[in-house]
Image 1 (tube, rainbow, N blue to C red):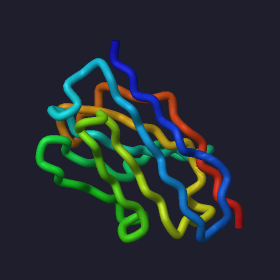
Image 2 (spheres, rainbow, N blue to C red):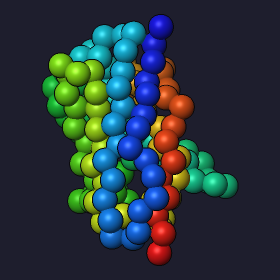
Image 3 (spheres, one colour):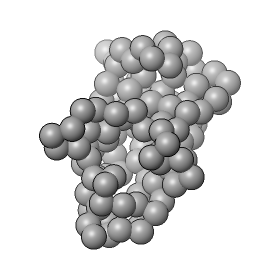
Length: 118
């Protein structure tokens, strides 16, 4: 059974930091692209950052470039999202996803809420 379990969300003041974790199981972690997406109330889901577990290539959305850092630990089948200099606009439910390509994410976690207060 495929599982993606996010953790690390919470309430933080603007300018603060959070680290999200996503523990994966049930598939070949090192053969997938792992991504973080977010969805704010009334808005469409957007891609935040992705990383190739096989070669470490990364992608960041312009809105988070320079503030967020994605990393993965293949030994632990876990992907992380370090979020610094958080803004109220970063408030959303953050989802972890896994896919065989940069635009094909087949597996999704349940999401973790991130709330940034001003």
